[in-house]
Length: 319
Ligand SMILES: Nc1nc2c(c(=O)[nH]1)N[C@H]1C(S)=C(S)[C@@H](COP(=O)(O)O)O[C@H]1N2
Ligand SMILES: [Mo]
Image (cartoon, rainbow, N blue to C red; front, top):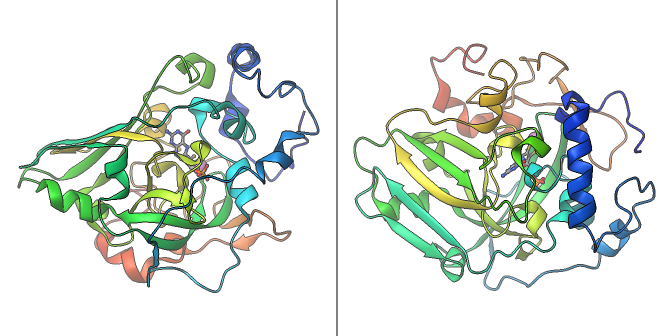
């Protein structure tokens, strides 16, 4: 067992014992390659992941929207401490259990209230627009954070190509789900496929990104290959991974954690140090690799750029 610091909270803390047991069975059958994961204390495979580097992405330019001045988290931190419940509910599990996940071929369908529906294949994902590197902070609702050099494009570039109709008010996202390579909903304790949503103006905001890589390489599976959402001013769970469907819609779409517990996980989920999670403080956070907790900033430090999206809204009510 991992020794858990009292300052760390996990959603799985509330996972009933029965689900936990089922999940362990699943992991035993799936992880031939990761023999000994269940119950392993030393995690020897974590070391080998350091060397596991993916294909380089060519032609990436640095975006002026990159955050400088903060130390990047290591490739190892970013790729071995993950939330991706389809591949395990413990932070170390997705890196191992997603290894065999096939992301090529892939389809990403963009449909709904659009004039020009689009279906992208795997290679198209890397050609939506010129690839940019953007260094963003990511703040998980569980109060840990990382700094990641993502590679991708503004989501707006893709949305403009499909020409949203005047009825489009929100954007709904869906993660690919396959029962053969992922946990069952009752094993993970959440519903699949994982779904998320943004208001259209949030989705069109220049900071909102579709990421296809990190550290100059294609995304590792555990980080949401081949394409995932990154919304740096919102809690990490809004950053839905391995997206297969995007729908422009009239009404606010469902989001997975909100469906499970609406009081704890709002639709907006903008990072807000003044609104605590019912079970822990959101005023501070633990940056992976650092010892002392740091203050959490409103909108995760992106207030100058995004606060105007919410002018006139009571952010305690629309959390
Ligand atoms: N499909 C899917 N997307 C997901 C999740 C998940 O469990 N399933 N977890 C979310 C959470 S809680 C966080 S903090 C981020 C973590 O991204 P990372 O593992 O790349 O750091 O992914 C988000 N996207
Ligand atoms: Mo998260």
